[in-house]
Amino acid sequence: MLGRHHGILSLNGYQQKQFCYDYWTHTYFKRLGIPGPPPKPIFGNALDFSKQPIFDVIDEYANKYGPVVGIYMWRRPLLLIRDLDMLRDIMVKDHHRFYNKFPFPMSSGNFDNALFLLRDAQWKRVRDITTPTFTGKKMKMMSGILNEGADTMVEKLLQSCDEDGNIDSLELFGSFVMDSVASCGFGLKVNSQKDKDHLFIKNGKRFFEFIFNSPVFMAVSFMPFLRPVVKFFNFSLFPKDVIHFFTDVTEKAVALRESHPSRQRVDFLQLLIDAKNGKSKMASENDEDDIHNKYFKDAGADENISTKTQKYLTREELLAQN
Image (cartoon, rainbow, N blue to C red; front, side, top):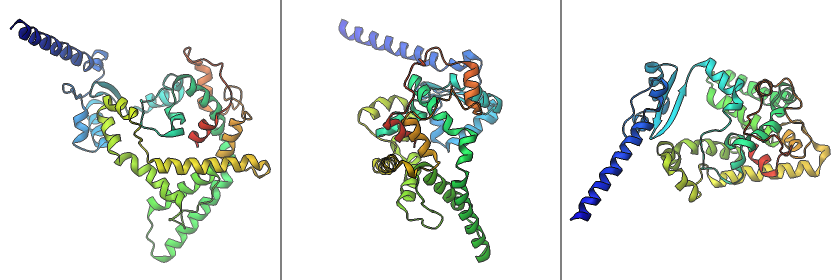
């Protein structure tokens, strides 16, 4: 009899602790004075996103509570920001303080080394190496490649006008973007505006379509506590055959460039190869025209991140960035 009462008392004590913990976590933004929708026990505001599209929910929150809203995905606090000045500070001026992104365990192979997934010291090192690739000067060097795709798009546009005047803007500009990515990132001439059955096009579409239709993605988005389980069983957000396709294409392109140095061309892939071989200077040493780097240097590197690191990309990091 005593043991039974002891078990009931222990259960009640556990429930009280869970209630107090739930209340404490779900009043985080309230203690900071940040407005937001009232969270439900355990679930927070996660159930709201199951009733209507995510962007409709966010828009509703912003209209009701203002440009800065605090919500909870289960017990994880999330800050929704629509204030443009604040976003500029976060994304540019104070970006060195916001380098760690949302935990994202559903990657695959080399994709773990993509810049937007890296954290702490590795993020800073890869960012410093790749930043010179995105300066205005380097982007202008690729203008000739982009102009080829733009000329094809204009031809397609004029052809549609001569025929029936109907233009599918999404398909037109989507094909132009795909051609630009294939040419600058992989050194491939795909011409998706005329050849829609190219393997690069098919795999590219699958890559993006799979993300938002993946049940695994939806599960961990609304139930963050499942992330360790998903990572343990090696589930991937992206189709593994698609990841393998782009990895294989990149590896072959890199091998071809390295075996024939005289055939180099000015594109994103070549700049990454130079960074891999240590030929690209660190952003902190050069490229004053990069606004992100300017703010980064003015504010100073985070004291918790070591700056004594290798100044070149590994092969895995190169493949992931591309």
